[in-house]
Image 1 (cartoon, helix red, strand yellow):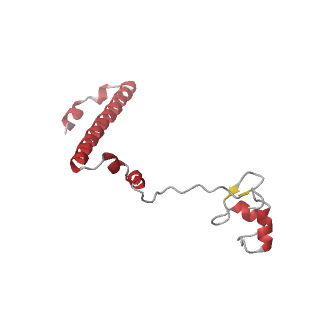
Image 2 (cartoon, helix red, strand yellow):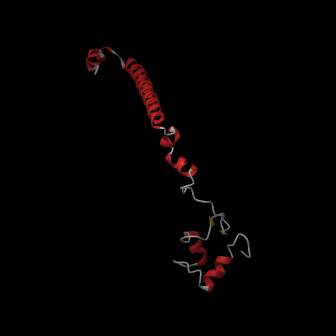
Image 3 (cartoon, helix red, strand yellow):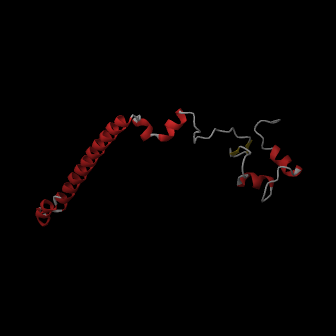
Length: 130
């Protein structure tokens, strides 16, 4: 598909500046042609979706359409941090304790049921009494 034309270009006659300018023009043309193909494809997809009675947005953004339909979303709710150290490190108190919490409590594994662990952990509470 057009390789004969490419073979006829005499690259030996071009210096480095000419070759770089040609490469830049080629890169620009490749980008333009790819963008045209993408736009043509998207238009065909929109037409096919319309024929099938499917909103095109549901095809392009299936997660968004599921959320609109009331199905579970992949987004997790943000949980406010419960603990903070003097360096500004924060932890919600959920999941495994981060290294800075373990170092502060002075243990390798945190046991919230252990009174001495809990006492040290309470010192890091953002809102005392929570």
